[in-house]
Image (cartoon, rainbow, N blue to C red; front, side):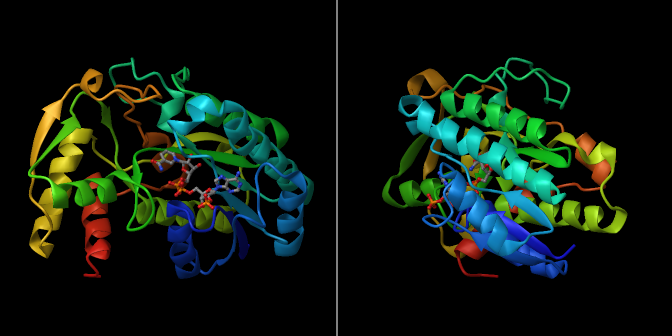
Length: 296
Ligand SMILES: NC(=O)c1ccc[n+]([C@@H]2O[C@H](COP(=O)([O-])OP(=O)(O)OC[C@H]3O[C@@H](n4cnc5c(N)ncnc54)[C@H](OP(=O)(O)O)[C@@H]3O)[C@@H](O)[C@H]2O)c1
């Protein structure tokens, strides 16, 4: 297994895979918009035919969580119908599909980290379309590994780390939600975990226990407020901003989409089945901040 089709070129995780896959001896074939469009079946088929992949990693998705509230049909095309088509092509070619999903499939009311056995109950249009994508991919092919991740950040793209550093540079005080908990995940760490999963598939061949849903997020947990404080701490040695970070409640920062109050993911199954563990979120954050300041 060598050639890996990676969708969502330019996105946070796909960009990480462009580095992580060659480091493990894989040859990534990255495809993105406009020529690869999840809502256009012909473009998916054309990308697949051109790449002749031995495995596929689907990183492309409608990720604009709030915008999905007013555009659920479009988000559904990208997040559910697209993965269904990709999975059907994988099934026909007999190659595995690694599909990415989200902690937003849960309602956040469990009060403990979610395992893969817990029942999803999305609160948002984005969460509904991503859950439909999991089901669609799993129903169209046998060799499907769904990796649910959370709070993804990277040195590029739109993410909380970059938003905080930009906002903190202009203001002495920031108000950040302190009653939502989760597991921040550095895209480079997730990309390395995906590469490790693929390396396991290459080594052992496909096994039935690889099929299904796995949680794959940074180890540990925090709140958005705790995350923000850690971001400024990590950036300080590089001359980053040091605003005061004031904890607020979710009700004080209304958004169009409702997020789970507690989307912590238990990632033990990924470690048990694939032998893969993501580093602690603080390590991932340090890595992303170093890259942001060009200190790598
Ligand atoms: N970001 C998070 O916090 C987070 C959390 C949990 C799960 N996830 C999941 O992790 C995966 C990767 O996320 P990410 O953070 O890398 O996302 P990202 O940085 O937003 O990248 C998503 C990519 O998908 C592409 N895309 C969007 N709509 C498309 C369409 N209709 N057809 C083809 N490509 C399309 C985008 O292209 P353009 O750049 O051209 O728009 C972009 O390159 C996604 O499945 C996401 O749902 C993300």
